[in-house]
Length: 503
Image (cartoon, rainbow, N blue to C red):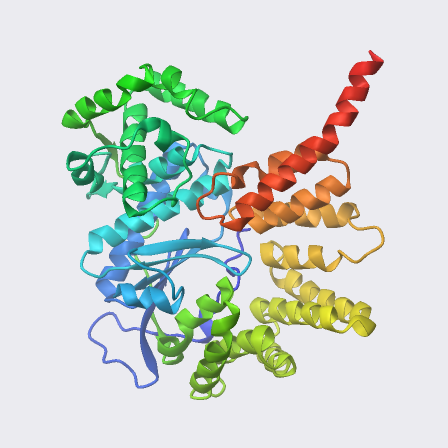
């Protein structure tokens, strides 16, 4: 887990040119994209070097703040989270074309775990979006549970407004949500507490985030209330009603909660804490090659999956752009990915084998080639066994370089689904390790739970998928996780009933 090679990200040492300390004119073969890294983040910025470095330092300090407040050892070992920083909101559409009215988003899928934000009009707002999304990422890594949806988002909003100064950090001092709370009629809290995030119209969503933020702020500002909030979160995660349990947690009847919070908002006590020490003091900044301007964001779009109607146009565009950069790693890997998924798979495999000849330690190329063989096996049943063996050979070469790569582990695990004894002990352990390394990915949890159910480990399977229930970013996988949970519980009950009858 401490290996620096990130999941489906690029080995930058092979494709970047270093920047001078100051004033170096852009090389002809370089792009507008800069890169820097810290222990917790790998940042790609279409922005100034000054902005990128400051963002990196603040993010690393923010990660240190969360570790300190949640008693997480800095050596716990998690892969650096890739962050993409773009100048305009329209640039977000290169990754997710249908997105509107957001400053950025976080993606945790089989393809990659990353965040992307726009700095258009307000660098501070972009910083808050990053803090919000990293809080989600951190909590899924270190404290996953089936939290109430309002608390998931309220917690991230609470930490998003952390303000870092040279020696201190101010927490909970203010929020852009205050303007909304002061200027409109509030939604009844019984509706807020029982709702999933990102549901309803724009006003519903604004109300959900604003009121969830303020309620979280209130609950966390007093030690007694914080203790009750912890008890509340545990009870909801165990299946309790998030609405019915709130009066006891807040210490006031539900009918009085809005009045109490409006009074609390007038003072809004914040916290001042020592700024965590950061190892991100001297950061090396590199400039990516020219291919990044044309393909870096499109490569991230491919990792998220592309709707069928959009695939032909994207395939044609990437073919045309990649042809401008013969021999360039980013161009060839992006082309291989789009050909493998939506075009000429044989061409993709040729490109990937070429990349492996160039660099036999290229984990991304090894993993992608293994995945390509798995896809080919699905469409060629007569040769499926041989193709799956080949896939596992490529995965094995990847493991030799990066034994803690969650995506390699996951792909190896699902490559065994056709085995007569699936899942054997080794396969179960492989899928469990993939999930443990990247617990943010709902699909890793779902497939681990499926393996556990097949081995009659029903309690473990149910616990595995519970954190996905109220995850606002899980999409359709939230319903799939709940179905898996109910299956595990239903299959557990007959055994429990039998045991009771034998007493």
